[in-house]
Every structure is written in C-alpha cells, then in structure tokens.
Image (tube, rainbow, N blue to C red; front, side, top):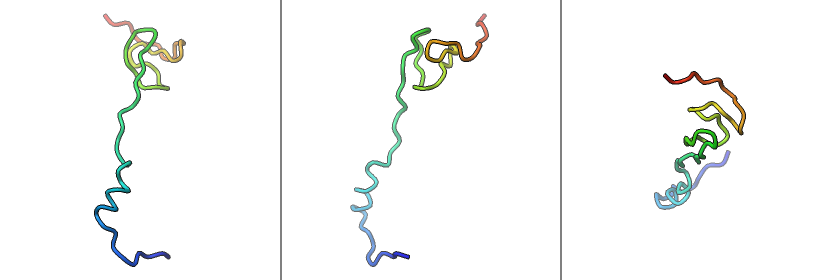
Length: 61
C-alpha cells in the first residue's frame, strides 16, 4: 500500500481543500404561488411540481 515519504505542508493541504465548501442550494420561484423553493422538489407552500398538484395541501384558515 502506498505510504507518503514526506509530510504534506499546510499550504499544499489548504490548496487542495479550496473547493471543499458548502454551497447554498439553488432556489426557484414557484409559478403558482410565488414562493421560493429548492429546484426539483415540490413547492412546500402550495404542493405543486411542474404545474401539477403533487401534494394536496390543507386550506389555511
């Protein structure tokens, strides 16, 4: 099994890890209700997905 001969420097490790970061999810505006929702998911406020009712939501009183 491969084993490093020399210790990797902090700078070299940091350079490799520059792309390992959390990114905010892309949000879309629902064409039905106007709420923001995560792409490729059902709208949490109206329950529609791609113009069709996916989840029956209860009417707010």
